[in-house]
Amino acid sequence: MLQLGVVAATFGLIFVGELPDKTAIASLVLGTRFPWRWAFAGVAAAFLVHVIIAVVAGSLLTLLPHRAVEAVVAVLFLVGAVMVWREGNEDEEEIEAEEEAEIAGVPETAGFWKVASLGFGVIIVAEWGDLTQILTANLAAKYHDALSVAVGATLALWAVALLAMLGGKTLLRFLPMRWITRIAAVVMVALSVYSVLTAVGVIG
Image: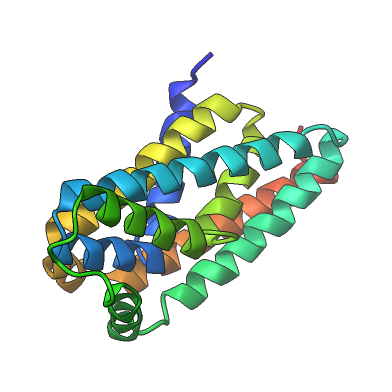
């Protein structure tokens, strides 16, 4: 059964974690170069595939004893905090240049399937083992609710991609990405501490 609280919590964490990510920059580049609806079709499909893989991996973690799950979750949240902090220090212009170079071989007159396939390919590679995929698996293990986590994570990833495609460079100009990543890192550290306390039995 879908739990709206879990959906909302997952959406918030994944949304903030994805904003400064290179896949958001890739979506921006795709949306400014090609018809955004075509690019979004491929990007959305790739994100959905990654979310499915992540929640399956997270669900497998729940087969471990409860305290072991909390210990693994604590470590993964801490890893996520480090990753999101480091992403906040990356140069957005350099990332954008890299993404533009990656799609430079596809003409702007390309048709729907070519553009959608390009969007799918770029995201499926860039998102593999990325912060939000790790977080999604982590949340699926923590909440023991694959469906709610999958819905929240998918909606968050799609929302960021749409914002990047429709907002373009204006979005990057006004959003304080560095502060967002810092806040996200602090939240993940707090969740890691909570999971550690749960694992050692201090918190029920």
